[in-house]
Amino acid sequence: MLRMTRQRSAVSDLLAQTQDFRSAQQLHEMLREGGQTVGLATVYRTLQSLAETGEVDVLRMDDGESLYRRCERQEHHHHLVCRSCGRTVEVGGEAVERWAARMAREHGFVAVDHTAELFGTCAACAAQEYQS
Amino acid sequence: MLRMTRQRSAVSDLLAQTQDFRSAQQLHEMLREGGQTVGLATVYRTLQSLAETGEVDVLRMDDGESLYRRCERQEHHHHLVCRSCGRTVEVGGEAVERWAARMAREHGFVAVDHTAELFGTCAACAAQEYQS
DNA sequence: TTATCTGCAAACATTTTGCAGCGAG
DNA sequence: CTCGCTGCAAAATGTTTGCAGATAA
Image (cartoon, rainbow over all chains, first blue to last red; front, side):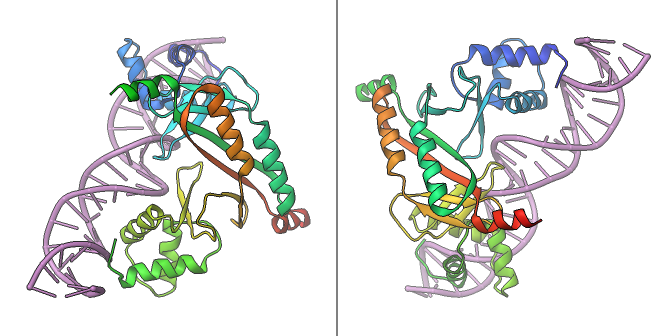
């Protein structure tokens, strides 16, 4: 992925404006609504390359769908995601890294990688739920 | 899921004998090899109900495939899985729980759930890799 | 110019579902 | 005897790919 095309800028710009994790299909729809015409396959291909270079983070949902988001920090971090509105907070995971390292050592595993994400209800959505 | 059928016992028994995480398709193939005839759809349906009752744990891989395993502990725990041979160790995650609770509190989230799994190379596979 | 990118449609992989018939209780 | 379970094949889902034409550099 080298060439800067209309389609790639469109996807990139959209991600820059979007706070929360979005699926490829959602992003495709958002582009379409905004008058941009980008093929779904191109959206997938672009997201794939952005993920490879670490420009966007990928979150795999329980139903198998992948969500994408341009994160503030490039370094390793985790996410606290609102199940209801998708609002996302980037959080550090020093405690998780230490835990992973200790488990690896205790059980003789090497090259141990980890996945850790948090899903809950943000303050705003909790308040709204309380009203209804 | 109430009736005890030949098919359900077969899947249940197979899981009882299997140490590592296996996909529905792998389990289906293993049954077939063992002379048992169980439809793939039935394997999926059975695994789904076993997962609902907490009798088996489900692990979703990066490629979207789901792996199933009958775990020793029923209570909440995490897994340290060998990427190479699939060997799995059940590990506690007190550190992770505390981390999740702290992040939730700091950012005003409630009802926070977490996913956390560890993937690495077990001692045996590391030794084997070293030889070749 | 020309190698890369795009769009479409077809291919893929995994999982789910509709339905007629089987079989456990 | 009955209602839930099974197997098959078809559908659904999310994603990837082949290919001919478009296009950035």
